Length: 347
Image (tube, rainbow, N blue to C red; front, side, top):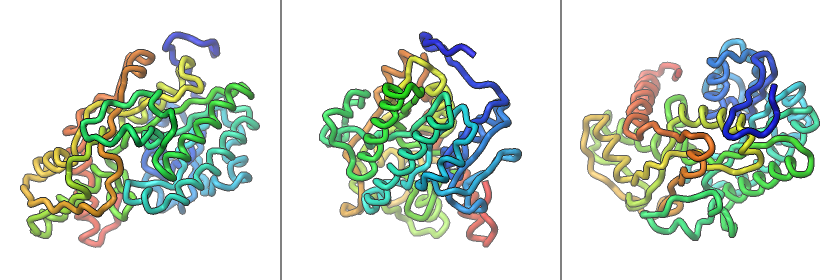
């Protein structure tokens, strides 16, 4: 396998080499395991602290381990024999969760600290860290008509309290493991990932899933209204899960991006009001909007500047939000109706 730095060329592992994914019982981690399996990789190890029946999805033939990766000994076990390690394990959720659980979010630094060390000790060739747009300076995100965030906008640092600071500090760990110890590390700043087989209820869900569920519930119960956190003018870009896992693969296997944080998100800016419009259209319903101005709402605006990713990879996440939300809405509606009937919720 070629290891020299190339201009945008992707350097992937052999199909029989071990790939480890931390946080594989979650939405993105589980989707990443399935992505690699569908690409023909069969030596896959999936790790999560949740009991196996609580994992969002499992893939047949994959080694599934239930381990709490905030403990160093478990990280050692997780990384044994790995050539590539993907750390997507973290205690996180939507804005309602991360604003109220800052300590839990900060404690995720234990996971990445132990995982990057044990990946290096195990001789892994590549280590991927899932960072977040929450690492960006909040002082430049106070206008819904926000300028798209480019990678350099993380500094001077003023990250989202709790979750954002954990991501920024963990990015630094990854960069130093390359500069000081020579392990190739890769860092993607996710921008609001959504899609089927994701969190859709319970307080950790993000805006697309939350709004879809609320519209489905309002339609089912014939309430005629939907509750919206904030005044509806907040803006975000939302990345469909298929684009996310493809982007992770491309970033981690491009040597031009070693120890270099990069945006991984859609550049399509959507207001919360527009999100509701789209969900209503998919559901075939029109609802009154009840704006909850005292609810958690995060920064006023956040979008992804994709100049850098397009330059290096000649690619960017491109699933239109209306298309992705329609698929997500349909999946959530099936889960909602299954739960209503008392059936086991499945993917």
